[in-house]
Image (cartoon, rainbow, N blue to C red; front, side, top):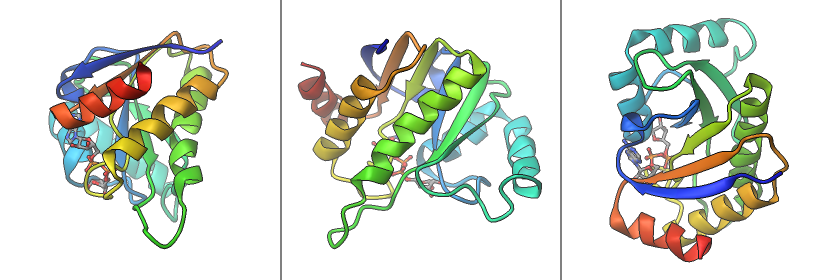
Length: 170
Ligand code: AR6
């Protein structure tokens, strides 16, 4: 099955879903943008889980394009799924890695039994990915992924990003 896709304009930390996806970096130890907001609002339990992951499976960090789950702390969700988007490059096509973020996050959601998942526009902020292309890859990948997730909500922070996703969803 492929999930129903819905769009929301707003802050992902204010959403309710089984899993909220974080646009993290390989360190898993926090940053700006979505990552900063998730750790701020979710509280220290998320960072504590991230540190445990760094001390075990991901000693060198979470590779770009992969995903891993932690508690959602005080957020209105059961899990946060951390994924690391690629930094946009004009020289190198990294779109396969960006698609992988969505695919791998849905795979983790399936392992957890999550039925509703909220995504931000991974890589479209600090990592510099052009919004239209980020939206195209996000929507196409979710549509092409077989998953038991029933609903994917893209949570877009600003109107431009919302409009870009709306053009893709049609
Ligand atoms: N809710 C929803 N969307 C948001 C929020 C929010 N609270 N805040 C920003 N956005 P970014 P990236 C939008 O920069 O490009 C961090 O330092 C934003 O406008 O959060 O993958 C990490 O630690 C943009 O459209 O993620 C990494 O180092 C989109 O979310 C790096 O940034 C993604 O922006 C990851 O950069």
